[in-house]
Image 1 (cartoon, rainbow, N blue to C red):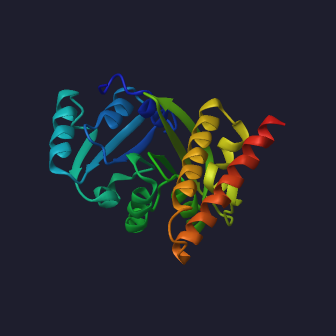
Image 2: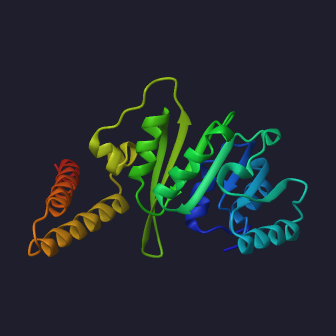
Image 3: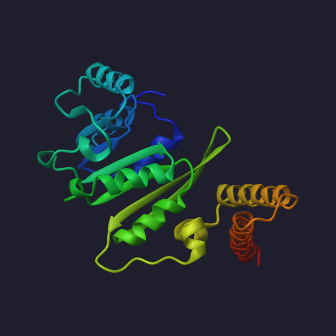
Amino acid sequence: MNAQQLSIRLARVASHVPKNSVVADIGSDHAYLPCYLVSQGLAERAVAGEVVKGPYESAKKQVIQEQLEDKIAVRLASGLEAIHQEDGITAVTIAGMGGPLIVSILDQGKDRMAGIERLILQPNVHALAIREWAAANQWTVIEEEIIKENNKIYEIIVLEPSNQPVTFTPAELLMGPVLMKEGSEAFREKWQRESAQWKNIIASIESTEQTLEIVEKKHELVGKIQLVEEVLNRENS
């Protein structure tokens, strides 16, 4: 992978960036995504934010190598602190982190989000946390995507601000309102895998002391399994 040939995962993230955006890529690593967006004319300008010194240095080198220093600012900063008001950021990409970490970045950076019209988020795990955040903060899911690359399954969630309260059913929170409707092969595979893992966990804790914590965990997992099976069975009928 490089700035001209992204992985399937990052290419799909890029596809959700509106043309002529000013993009902040948070946790940018080598800055491949912002370099690609700017060099392909998909974004006018970009900020590559990194909190770790090593990846920050790699991002700086990549931007210089691509001769994009005038279009891409590389900043060593935590989360959305990489965004400055004068940047005029309209879209934010955060890819390759856990859902709860992405949520913490958004929560801690709320004062930096004025003018942002779209969030393109790619959680590696626990996408549910992002949908919960969206509902609590009035961001609506306008698109979702699920892809399989190198035997790993990734979700992409695209959010835009809403003037109305945002609500999800328990199944939509867990599995994604758009993804549920599409019911792709990758979607089915993901939730069959998850359900099987939960059943294994339940089986493994059956023989342990049934403390209140264990009973509550088992109840939570049974509820999730029921939600998943209802959705998958509905697709088959």
